[in-house]
Length: 312
Image (cartoon, rainbow, N blue to C red; front, top):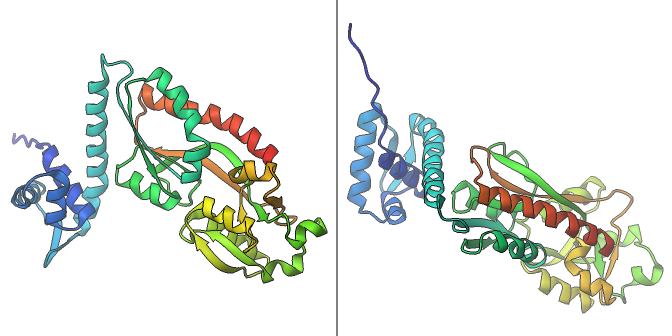
């Protein structure tokens, strides 16, 4: 009887394959892996020989995946990620308090939520190296996909089944205006005037901008965006100066609202709420360090949410 033995694929070849799929070129993959372009080329030839089919299409300097390559990439990413996690867990054994925490979060979350989380986290893991990548939801999701971060603190995305979303807190978007705005004097938002306002809104690529756009489109209202900025601090200053109306969650301007340099008003009868949470790969097995971080995000968020609702 002929016994056929299936030989496992080389992990280094899989790692090179994932890097090549991500960069789209042998030069980019070699740079990401800190090896020569020739080493990547040899690894891909050996991998194609091992699996018995063509995985790559080469057009000039551009590299794309064949149908077989796309199928392999799904499993290869899992294998490479599991190997990385295994190495990290082994390195952590016997090193209590050591480790590496990598996460992404918006600048507003970094300013208002993250400091309290990290103060408590450092008590349990004083020697842990922490890497924070500031960015909006779409940016942090891209970093998560590329395994450049392990967690993303973000608004709940749509159609991302590969990620597990753990809810943290909910907030509500409102009009934010200068105390001299006519709506403040009237004591209410005049619905007929909503479309005529000049709006100072956050980055169009953000989840929040899309939510606002859908909300008013459903009511048949087209907002006039006169200024678009990527800084909430700058937006607040422009609204204070009476240059327009903004829309964001009141907790972002907690101090300004308390000092009455800004005023929050409801969008209308329908509330526009956002769900914040923490995302990670579904395939990721959380370590004790990871579970501690996620648990602290949850507990700190509960206190934060109570304060945020008061500021609204």
